[in-house]
Amino acid sequence: MLLTKKTKKQAASSKETRILISVTVIGSPGPIRLVVNQEELVAAVIDAVLKSYARIGRFPILGTNLNSFHLYCPASGAQALSPWETIGSNGVRNFVLCKKAEMEKPIENEKPITAVQFSGKGNGRWRTWFNKSSKIPSH
Image (tube, rainbow, N blue to C red; front, side, top):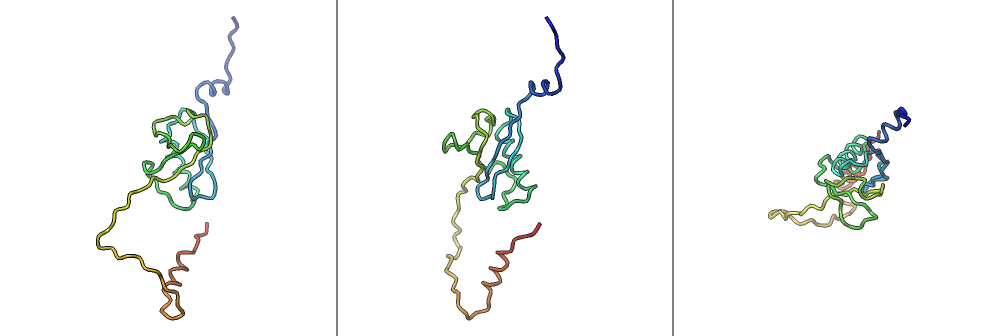
C-alpha cells in the first residue's frame, strides 16, 4: 500500500465544496454573484447577499433584516426556500431574492390621496418635488 501526501487543493476540496451562485434581487439592475459553501444555510446566504448589495451601493435600498426576505429557486416553483435548508440541497445555482409582503394597516385619521392637478398656475411645489425625487446620487 502506497501512501501519498495530499496537496493543498486536494485537502481543501475534501473539506468543503464551494459553489458560485447568482442571486437576482427583485427591482435591481442585475444579479449578485457570490461564492459560498455548498453546506451554507439559506439564512446565511440571504445575509451575505444583503451585505454585498449594500456594500456595492445598489438601489432600491433593501435594509439588513434578513427575516423580511424570501429566497426562491426558480426551478423548484413558487415556494420559498426554508432558512434552515442548505443552499446546495436543490442542485441549482440561480436564485431570486424578494421582500416579504407586509400587511398594511389602515390608518383611521388618514386623508385619502387625491390626484395632483397640473396647471400653469400655482406655486410650483410639484415641480420642486419632482426635481428632488428624480435626482440620482452620483458615486
